[in-house]
Image 1 (spheres, rainbow, N blue to C red):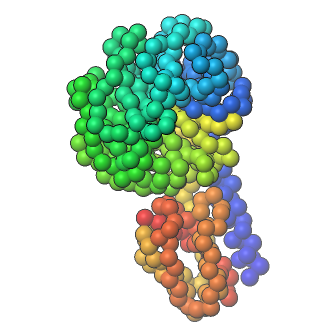
Image 2: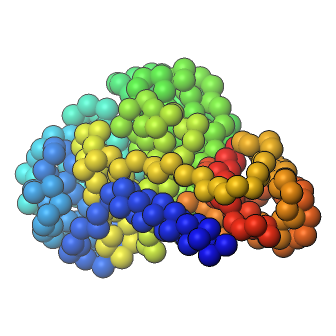
Length: 403
């Protein structure tokens, strides 16, 4: 019994320590405690992080050091929500109250652009050096807005669309095909460079959209939902992820992608199978808001309280869960399962069941005194869990897959 108890705890400790060591996101030394909301790198070494209180920081050595950049804003002490560069020198900032700024010299100086609105602008994207789009809402009623420039930000025109909702994120795959997501289950699509937008209904409130290829795209919801298209946004299918209160989605290939979350426990989760399954790589006390990768391996995440994270090995991988067994026979069925799991022990009564997530946290516990028990796991997020089965003979750990 003592030997089995020791074996159990050593194995569990090794698994958890390995997860921490292998999930290689490193927290960089941050120059600020202000909340950071967006990050972008125009090349491998040069990057920008922006956020609240007119915060704009630049690195020229891949995040080792960050320097504050002066900005001239029309309204002081507001927030920058999105940063995008079209070249090493030319970049744009979008923010609250209609603020748009541009630099032509790598952030040494910034000059205001006249957006013509006082809306809160949440996302900016350029499909070419001169053609760009920005989306947002009025900050009060939630009325959305789409602005377009064809002259590098010198002037902006309103785009017409039919849905009266907050718009959160915009992306284009080429000069004609673009996608916008927002509140009230909204997905917008254009095939003519924004002249017309068609509305499609999703299944949640959306915050982020990403297209790693012309046909394959992902839309991230605030709940546990991710939607995926394989035909350029014509139709969307619902996937599920392992976190709630999600903020950003970023794919480095059609199959490998990352989600950052916040508010109710911040995580970075990763998929390597096109969103079919997600695995936690990193957990934080700070809300994580924006992700950008300069290549398949090197990526950055920024968030609240000045958080800046970096990986140089695609965040590491996820750790497979080793099962721990003894001489007793423990059977689980069905496994994988989406709702109910039956646990049966041969020859000894089950005294206690515990379900533990990949962070080592207990998410379900049940005491009993029977050979067989059925437990409801429908409320658990999709993913991999430990099932600890305690009997009179000792403790066994089984791998549980929640679909």
